[in-house]
Amino acid sequence: MLPFLNEWASRPKDALIHTSIFAALLFASIFLHELAHAWIGRRQGVATDRIELYLFGGFTRFKRAAAPSPAWARIAIAGPLANIALAAFFDAAYYLVFGELIPVVPERPFGWLPSRSAGPLEWTLWIGALLNVSLIILNILPAYDLDGGVIARHLFLRRFGARRAAQIVGICGIVLSILRFAIILPAAVAGILLWLPPSFKPNWTAARGVGARKPKPDPSSETDVEKAVEWRGRGGRRIHK
Image (tube, rainbow, N blue to C red; front, side, top):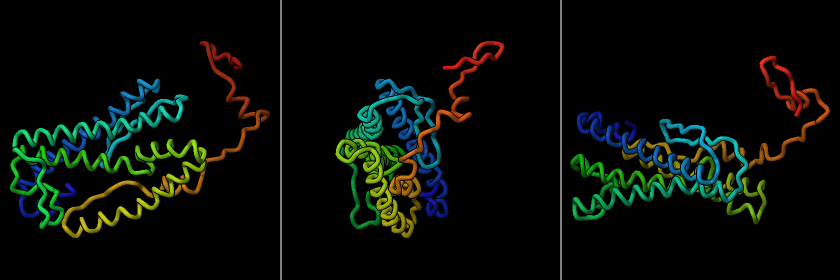
């Protein structure tokens, strides 16, 4: 409902239609985006634990697996590629039905948004293409926790090493997290409330290098000895690895 608050106050019926269509397209596009991650992950030998959808996006949780960096980069790029296919589908459908590509009204603020006079079908195809283009742009940004962060880290890995590559992406993410308000604030003035990634916290953590170096465990400690024990059998007999 956030992008349509002004419309809810003046034209609640149209706002209900637009909000419903937008919500359905948003979650369908995000789900197919995450499903593409899961599908390529399976092809790379990484099993999926679950796919989570929430208010501002989605997340694919993979089971722990030892996969090389190129494999994770392929998994990451699969999501934006799915959105490219969806954007092309909606744009092609709009062209076939209405005889033109998505129109833009330059004299209107945020003229790339559908007009209120658009019919349900026109509005669906229009916003479907724009939504997926937006998801493509956002997800390829070099920041955490976006797909672009994983891809950028892979590109920097060979040249700078794992720790330095993560820090570079984190610094880029901090800059982008601050610059996003250049879009959020003008949109709010125009009556369109948005909240865009990337988040500040994960990029700040990566830029500081927190967690990059973990102390080596002491094999002589009791806790580490206990971790090296498995419980098997009905009687709970301990079997050392």
